[in-house]
Length: 272
Ligand code: DGL
Image (cartoon, rainbow, N blue to C red; front, top):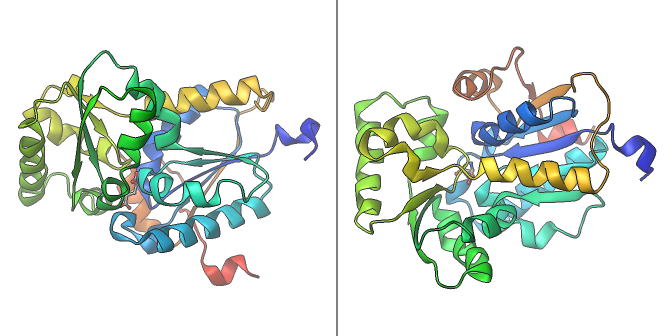
């Protein structure tokens, strides 16, 4: 690719749904003049109970879609896809791919703590990628991984105020607290939407949203590799979903205000 024009090219972000907006919104704050695409793969929600093969095929579909739009980089704003698909697809595209877990592991490993809890989806926990990535840098850290089975559905249905849902989140948290972790990583980009519940039962300082480290990592990489868009104008954004644009817009409100309905993309539209 021509480096003179590549800096104007968009960056693609994706997740199974609104979760990746917890990363995307922070990215827009620090680099508002980047052109961005966001894909919420809502037709395949939740990713957390899908097989590795399914997750690889969803990632390929989205990356092929982004490739057609000449992205200069893709951000996997999804822990589940980072854990299941990244290793397999990472060399198949001619743009940089940023996977959330692998990009944040070093900084997590350097936290001045010894006991780290990880809340994540069943697929992420099953992969063991959080532990293996953190242990590459710090084999001493005690890690307590825990699957949270219904949390993504709670967020996508905007059910954070329902008593049953509050009970589910509270019980999972109490289970984790038995390990007396120093900090708990919200290892699914949907989980920061549940902070109002979590912080009722533990100090909010206990929870780590890796998005903070992730966007800093991406920004530094883009700067070091001279990939930042130097335009002084606000970057454009285009938001896509694979089903139910209206529900996506409603569920996203807590983290990102979307003014127009996302564009619906399906296998048939992309192949036209
Ligand atoms: N938000 C995603 C993650 O970070 C996927 C959640 C899901 O769809 O299960 O893992």
